[in-house]
Image 1 (cartoon, rainbow, N blue to C red):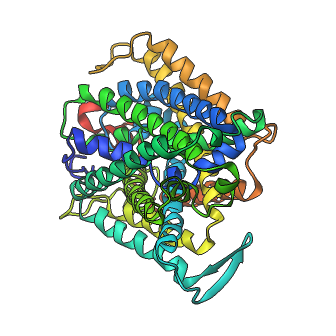
Image 2: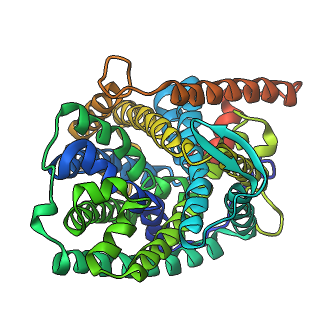
Amino acid sequence: MKNERQRLKRALGRVEVFALAFGTMVGWGWIMLPAQWIESAGVLGAVIAFLIGGTMCIFVGLTYAELTSAFPLAGGELAFSYRGMGYLGSWITGWTISFAYVGVAAWEGIALSSAVHYLVPIPPIGYLWNVAGFDVYLSWSLIGIVGAVVLTLLNIIGVKPVAVFQTLLLLVMAITAIVFILGSLAFGKAEHVTPVLTNVKGVGMVLLMAPSMYIGFDMVSKSAEEMNMPLRDIAKVLIVSIVVACAWYIFIILGTALSASPDFRHAALIPTADAAAYAFQSPILAKVMITGGICGIVTSWNGFIVGASRIIFAMGRSKMLPSFFGWVHPKYQTPIFSIIFVGAICALFPLLGENALIWLVDSAAFGTVIAYLLISISFLRIRKKEPDLRRLYTIKNGRMAGTVAAIIALFFLFWYTPFSPSALRPYEWALVLIWIFLGLVFLTISRLFDRGKKVTDAKRELLMFGEEYARE
């Protein structure tokens, strides 16, 4: 069993873990979407939506912190839900959170094509098709495809190079955002801060997107097996990353509102960048903002490839998916086939064009909320079933925190249902159904792949947890 269970290399310190978590949360959305949030919910409504989203993530994050300190394993959610809900609950949780991560990773290629096109107009060469009103050209799609290939190769080489690269890009992005925020305060106008608040439906539409804007803090649990830091520090890194991300989004919303009038924001191609140019009266600032946004795309993309591949790796290692997903590269000690699978999906989605971005954001947020609900339930069940479990970090009033996390997740889940004024649209439901179908196909292949090698409960326990964390 020791030889059969693949392991990942410990290489990440505190700074790298924070860079992965925060960089994953803050991608391209802060450049492209604030004007849409303001238009839908109003400035105050958008801020309220992100505060609610951040609050949910903090409560869920506390449960993650305690569980990760008890089970510092790759694809942490899989282990948490297995101990809390058994095989079926664990499989659903793992496949759902992988959908959320793959979904957001897939739209980063689309975002990269849009960003590069803004900086240097891409000539429309090689018309492919029209998707929901957007003409897709091969020249435009190739930018995202090449980006996916490059980041896939970087992730195969090792998580340490990814984390160092992530930290450097995050520094550039932070400088860009600080310049924008200070500029909006200096040159913006209070009369631009309108609408202040729209209606419940508008706030709901922003709430619908908020979870996908925060997804990434749980990178800490997915990469726990690769951490080279005290497990007691997990909670600090995790919560700080959520708070900083919440503050980031709120300041960007306020900066965008101050910088330009509602009519200008509505007509802008890339609203936050155009608003910066308008406030500074300099087109160069738009280019600077796009550069910061591209850094955000890459940091987010890196994080989601790491996170998605680790949860899929953990499922493969535990024989919940075909075993090859659980294989580790002998030289680089990275889950090579899981990374290639995620990278291939990322390379395909730029072929759907720019309008697919919102579909992926909303459907990924739906998957995120379901996973957070299941983790909250698992946390409560583990607290009850294993009160003496060794935890290096314990939440005070844990039962209350877990219950609040579950209630908030249920509240968010309502906004995606057909009963909500901001329900998922047909394209988004189609993506959900395709992922469910793909999961069932992989489950069937897994059963055939391991035919004659019956996986007992005891064996799966050891494959998932290793000897150190498995139950006797």
